[in-house]
Image (cartoon, rainbow, N blue to C red):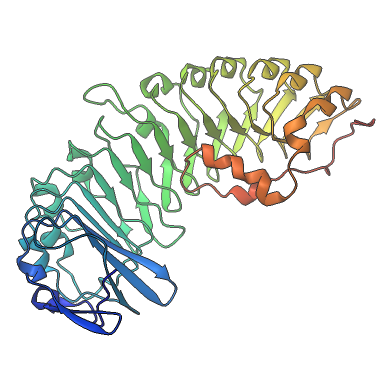
Length: 396
């Protein structure tokens, strides 16, 4: 493990000495002149120090080099343009506010396929990225200070497969949702200020079949109905539209999402019955419809969805008895139907939910969620509750 006792700024390309356990050693090649570097990893190890791991340098440098410097910042990224073979660049909590031409510098990396600039105080997206010819597959600019609308050129990055601009309320992207390349498989736009109807995005015409698998638009200001265009998105495995202002009924066409494993529509204003077409989503492991205005009975067909591990229907307007078919959900770990108008007795077969009984702590209850690689979901709202305003009676 190699540690640099220097701050990383524009003169990184002139760096020639390192310190290992108090002993000096020489880096034989200036970093700014290295042309065989394949990976940079700028990441935070503890709150007050940043780790910069440089691996797979080729013959000139070995692997596992780490640089430590608290309050790391970069004044000039021009030196990085010499790394013509660099494929992966990750900066995490590296202040890039002083570097206004960061996109120009990175767009000169002809081999770059993955660019992660996370929590780097970025406040602009230059159009130069849209005119570059880098084979970018993954672009992650989360937790920055980006504002305004997403540039149209994002939809023209034909090789892009993963785009993450989620911000946890630090980004302020707004306006309409962007058009997509059909090659995108992961899209995370959570925690921004996108507004307006969601239908234009869902019903956009793509140049080819969509490959989108993970879509997270949670915690925005999206409104309107969900539309009936879900047949365009049959590759979806994880969908999160929670914490928006969506209204109307859950469309039956969502039942065409045969690969769906996790569906989050919580905290909207959706109404009507839970559509029976969702029984066609035979891989569904997590269903969160809590915090809406859904009415009608708790569907008995849900007992057929034997892959369900978490079912959250709390804070709706559901009525009637809890159907005994629910007891067929042998994989169920979390069941939350609190704050509805359910009545009758609690089925005795609830004793058969053995996976619930083996969970000792709240942290244990959420450990299974690692099986669902959703991004941006506030798991603390997915609570297992024994309280509520239902009228069910009886003992387990």
